[in-house]
Length: 360
Image 1 (cartoon, rainbow, N blue to C red):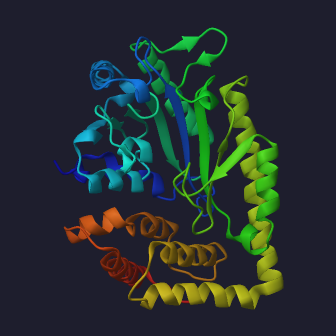
Image 2: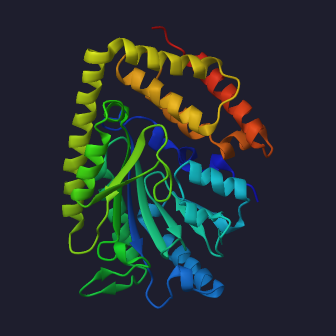
């Protein structure tokens, strides 16, 4: 049965409204907690019946959890592939839960609870992935929301916990707090000033890691990097959050410095680069996904540098998400070939920019 997006709170995309702190540089903040239910095999080793029992137990408990009072329940395993991809494109479910790899099809019992502030993925790598996704740089608010959900759900569902090691998870790197905190950040200044390698090396030295637009296994496109904690064992949630908070603030400051240097030392080159990107998006009749992301990165930089006026960060966020293949297919009401998607993507971008185009 096709997914009715109108049922989702704010369509599931309130996180991209550019309302959070530093939203011109930080697109979103996410915190996930990995939890497993006592007495069941981990999802990857569980049989169909076990996964369905896990789902039934969580669904019963969710009716008594205030944090999930206004959630929408979606059986991911009953959705067509394009709708599963669409949820993934909106950053609402992981690639694994959506079953997007041919080698790892969607599991029986795969489901998600989607609320305005928090959500729960069921039968992903772990039985439960509790998550909060916020606009901009909002680590404390995201953590507070997901912590409340964790307390309320944990009071009704017995978590698998070890007295020494903490929360038990399918992947040993998540054992302990089970927490993965991340920010999706746009860093064209550091890339163009060739400082990005140094920044990434510094992250790894501090026990942090980086990935692409869609986390683990995804490529970096459009100068978007997802920065997150790498370890979860032996440190508290507050320690992990504080470290990420301090480091990301430094990265934001470094990006702002890099942008000032670009304007000072290579202003005409940068202006030419971003206006070429803007011109291509305004008039191109075919755009691949990577092309669109890279040109949008240039325009986003131009808006941050105030070289282009009248164009909101929200519109750029919308273009980033809605110009992907599943969204284009849904808008057209049919499956699209790659070449058709390139044409539809270019048309969508042209029309969106034309509606909100500013002057130099």
